[in-house]
Length: 337
Image (cartoon, rainbow, N blue to C red):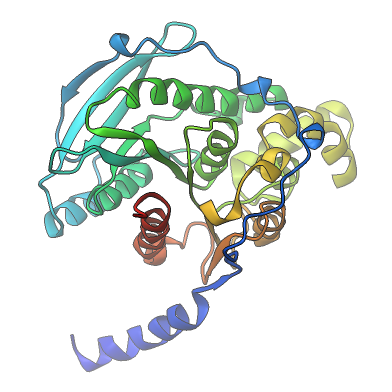
């Protein structure tokens, strides 16, 4: 590297060193128990269990998505894991496509259910899976159910899509816990952006999940839908407000909260032990503003929280670092002697 390149990179490295810091991290004492009568019902996530024998599995290439980033990562990292394509059915009998990575060895391995971002290819969850399998974790992920916000006009559709993604993951778990190379007592969830919200919901509603890590995350779905700078989200918000004659943020939050509360991780946050969780957010994020990460952090009981010096779409320089910190957290959660 030349001197000019080094001078150009120096400010970025300094920013990274100064900006990536964590808040919280709970002590060794468990949180006080929450009175059962104060907990919201979780029957919203009740589902029809999957017959594990109905899942089809076959080997596939080590890289699924067409991505030079994934190709480079695969080139420079271990490639001795095994990859499989899954086909399972949802509750309506429609095919859902998934992918499984298994580390080398006999197992049984701790496993992570990984969730994808809102839109685009599935390279974020695949990148996460590649990083985690190289840390010794089996990783299962399903291809997303698209929210298709440009064509939606009702908050209940968004709610149902988020619910369906969580139910799909619960059915995936029904199969995963029967796999001879998976340890059913060591399961976690992880996700990025909207995937982090679904991963949290899975952690909250399914006791097979011990904990997890959640990147570029936040709570208060109604508020996020109003304040997000994401173009499809803003257009969805504006269409709904025009149809209903709403003109203020207060009207939006009041009108939408009843729909979004069942798929808001804040609703069930008190169920979780903060020691089992790690969150990360972007200090300059305008898609899920950091104020919503703050709200989630407080509701979850102040777990460890990494604040990254980036926005939502500028997280890439810190992505692998954040996933590595998530893997460190999983090591402490799932690999204790």
